[in-house]
Image (cartoon, rainbow, N blue to C red; front, side, top):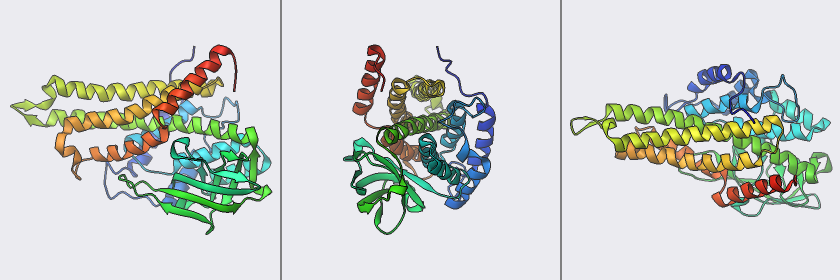
Length: 361
């Protein structure tokens, strides 16, 4: 039975991360803005772009359950950074494990290259396709695409490949307006050639590397939701204690207490499922049932925590001066990242079927 605990050095890494992300947090100061290049340089200097090796069973390498500490604090601060995108790109190239991909991982790790992953979601239409060494298709909601030196592209149709594609004028990058102001873009490949030397993996090797990296990325995103839930719980409880109506604090009413409890339950259930998924990945067992349940819970929690917080704050939660709406903006992006409930349910059923029939992917 796996122990549902965070990693050994979780608390120490969380403390460092908290001090870093306070500077990034709009919850502390709306004028906070750390330039993109400075963010990447800081993450490289801290060693965060080299933490954990998904391809190694090295006891000295930080576990995913330890690395999650960074993302819990990033969620608690509601800090918007490219750390997850860069981490997922690094994980894919490390998992591929060739001499060329290892060199790419080193460049990502030391901050010398901004490599943005393009792994289109099945929930957003047809994937990018590759035929005869040419890429076609549109990948929506790619974070920080306008900052990429290169794209790490996974084609999900035609020839299955993972390839490095330089950012250039032949690739269309169009901002996708959204209520949260997230830096997401539609990336269009229209007859974009890919040289053989740029292909890092093909076939099942390519698919497997992306699948594992996406699973790890989902754990880190869920850790963000957990951190945001903790911060929003503190904010909501404090408001319920300070806001007075009908002769006393509104927190004395059971209806308000139930709403605060809903936030706490949603956040802590997300923590349980996140630790379960991280433990499965770290232990090298099939993580898909845990990942599917975690994705479903985290998507539900992203909705639940902001809904309950708005119920307590009422109209003031929608005011510009309030921080509550900032969580709402972030939650909508997180729900997209975790995918549709139907897809998560299908993945859970398929994973459980593999377990009970003894068939492995």
